[in-house]
Image (cartoon, rainbow, N blue to C red; front, side, top):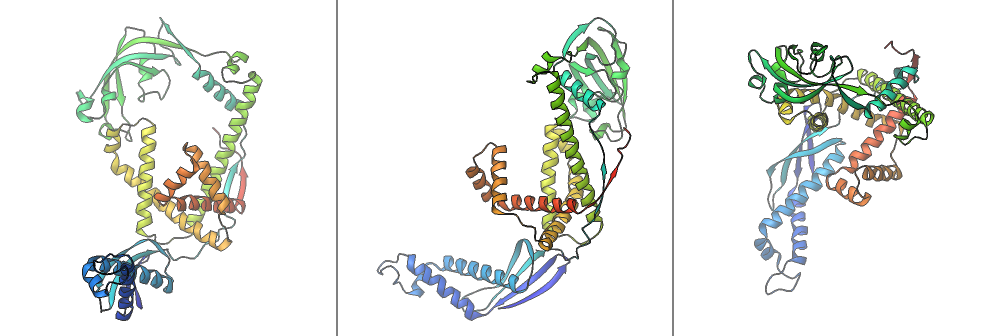
Length: 437
């Protein structure tokens, strides 16, 4: 077998294969013998039918199997001999194939980027020395109280902190908003719509222009849509709303006492405070760890540049698009708005995928150099954990993973986590005072 390699791009190569006719005929003979053992030919005992008769009867099947076997075996051996670290699947182009003649084919492959590892020990990161403050505790407890709040209709002007129930219709440039943005029906008209009377609630400046209003009042509200407004057709434009105040609702927060603590299944108020403080500290620790890791990865990425293969980039971009869309849907963004922003979503995913794929290759090379491995026990434990998260049996979850070649993704995630632990352990971390709020 003769194999030649031609560079097409930094991470793309054309590999040409030339397999002599003797090898081709030997493969045909092996394939025909396999058919001979299994094929039923009238007038002949199993395994005794003449080879030429079998070839005529099953010519297409034998040709297909011989070609598959020759190309598969030759490709695998040729890639190994040439020491090519291929990512993804090859594009095979058949040039010449037939019984009694040499096989020639070409494979376009993408390879791992070739780069020298930068110094990855001692990567810099800052760690904010934050602790749970009294203000943090107050905010968390107020959030818990808000979840148990009652609302009382009041006959007085709207005050900050109240909720106002309104009917409204909106126009822009003298037309209903849906004429400019057909999907923005919720911005055009609503009945019995609740708005909290605080800065930043609903549309910018909307609640502020209703302060002091009473039930039955009607007001005109002018809104300047921001330049980066989620509905792009309205960005930078001005909207006019005709608003009717239906009711003013005063929010009544429960008292902080043992009865309130019991509503959250705490033994008493002190125990609830302890639980809240513990949760806040865990959240702070988790954020601190994420911040350090993000800084370390950013520092690592900045220390080296190299070309990235197209296929992993495309795969990661698609994955990020799905993640962004899923996040939008969970936040209640409509399908119409998502469709409207598909170009921006794709551009955002492309940008993020570059960093992810670059980090992946760096982590893989660091793992090889440092001898970082994922044990079978770690892999199995993660699969069991994921199965529980998806409310599936480990056996069923593993089967689904195997069907979509997902086990290697779980393995890769574990390996990358181990590399991140290593980088954080060897990072140069400086403790700093937290920025003023």
